[in-house]
Structure formats: C-alpha cells, structure tokens
Length: 81
Ligand SMILES: [Zn+2]
Ligand SMILES: [Zn+2]
Image (cartoon, rainbow, N blue to C red):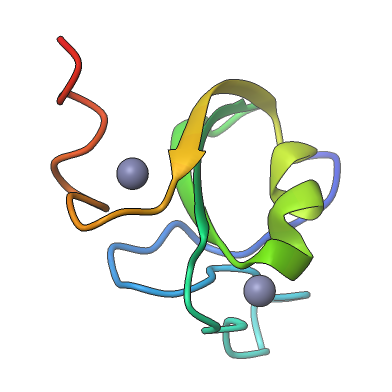
C-alpha cells in the first residue's frame, strides 16, 4: 500500500484519521464523509474532521463525499439511488 496512511476504516462516529496503527484515531466529530477508492484496498468510506479532510482526500481516488450527517455512516451512500 502506498500513499498517505489515514487509518483503518471505521464504522463508528468520529474522525478515522490516525498517523499509524499504534496510535488511536483522531476521534474528533466527523464533519465530512469521503468515499474513496484506495489503491490495493478498494472502496473505503472515511469519516473525517475538518482538519483531516485534506489528508483523507489524498488516500485514494475520491468517488463521492458529503457533509457528515445523521444518516452516516451506514445509510448515506445509498440514499440517492
Ligand atoms: Zn481528525
Ligand atoms: Zn455519509
């Protein structure tokens, strides 16, 4: 896997950013929800706080993103189909 590491995919609420596997995730309230295609990883949904949104966008090819809302993280990606 290459490129910036932004932490493990999470299914909780809060920024998923962490600088490495041994460091707890940022955990700040998520303000943006980014779906990106990470090389070697596949589609990953990232919850991110404002401070880490730029990092999250560089994790892979961004497929979609929206303001983190009450339907996140489970219900939001299919809401428009
Ligand atoms: Zn963060
Ligand atoms: Zn969402």
